[in-house]
Length: 116
Length: 109
Image (cartoon, rainbow over the protein chains, first blue to last red):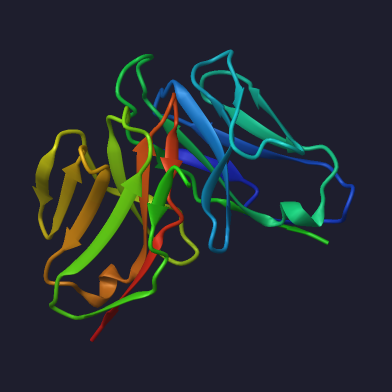
């Protein structure tokens, strides 16, 4: 039982390049999330998926796209990377029965992205 | 006004003392509240959650919730150097959690 896994762990991109961050969970959770974390800013939600087949924008969605490939996997794509997207990206998942209490989110180890 | 506010610190506490971390939130409809701990360079990990007004204790940690005043706090008794970390408060929003910016706590031996 690996929990939440993310790949890659670290990536350097040049401005304008594209890349996809991968996330997978093996806890059979309904909901998955992508956050970015910058110094002094806490965790900011980029996109989330409340259940398989649905995705919604979070607080800072501009410049990103997501795909909920199946119940296990939720990917984040940067189509044209910018230096402002230099950050640490965390994926998380939670059980979250629809309409119920928000339940604990479990985080992956993070991806450190540097855009030059 | 931010939805979830924390004092960013740093908060410095001597070893063995009680560390008190506070968080206020703006959405009166929030029903679930979480405290996460994040060590430098690591991902957040859950310490406690609380749903009801009052105190909830787990070992050296106590979470306190006051919905009328819209604040939630975390007390750490007998603080240890290993408690030095950033503590994130998270509050239920619509289908998601809203995180505060975190309080950096340092326990001094």
